[in-house]
Length: 103
Image (cartoon, rainbow, N blue to C red):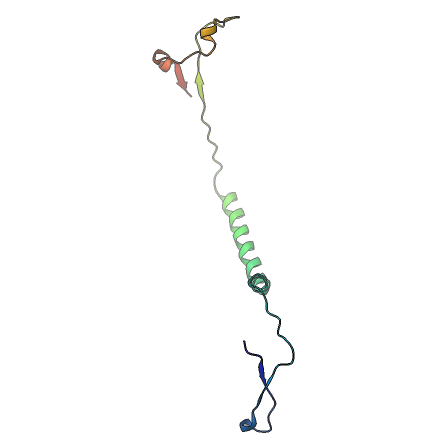
């Protein structure tokens, strides 16, 4: 932006340009964004309100649906009070696969 401003002329042909006496403060991009958000605050508030009201209406209108899923694995071995050192971490076998039940 230049620093020249027009002087009030007596006629249009006498228009003269003189240097501006003060420095025009420049705004940062963040200040411009915040100013734009502030100018449009009513539009933003209206959009947020409409979306919130629609979400509440939709959540109340939909039927309640509850789903759950569980699995049970049965261990047929009898517990040992003091297992051997090699049996501290039991390994699953293929024969036990049919004992895994889905409910």
